[in-house]
Image (cartoon, rainbow, N blue to C red; front, side, top):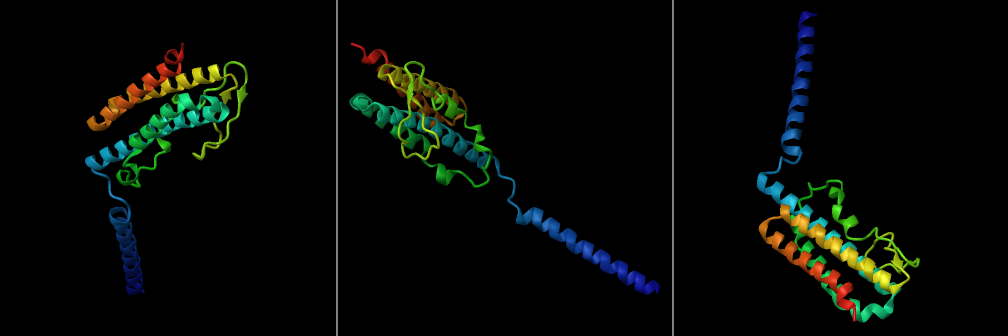
Length: 200
């Protein structure tokens, strides 16, 4: 009887040891290890690149919306729109290979989207809903029916986007910071060309 109880306790302890070993191996080998400092830096940079590209992509969507609502502005806006498209490509370059799968934060709140003018609405003579730009945005930006107001809003969006990039470069690695500075400067020029630069 006593021996049977001893055998039972040994079996229970053995089972517990196996369970503990399984938990230890799961936490040590089955789950991703804690990333190194270099890996954390790469994850942070990849997230920054995605946010910055998203910021300029929102501005690109606004260009497309204005062009769809006001085709006569195409000659004036097409070169600026092409430059913004190039900014999106440059800012997002390398994110696919540089972003580890561990970087699944809640979209990192994407602060640039709002600043890039996605939420800017018409402020004058009503608004027009443009056709989707093909970017996958569920709700395209609204555009004022008055071309002058639409340009004013687009200039404000370009200026806001430039401000976001200028603020972001403070947290960027040197090479990417230089790119952000260049894109921010271009955005400021675009804002000028969309307003004062187009007069007279």
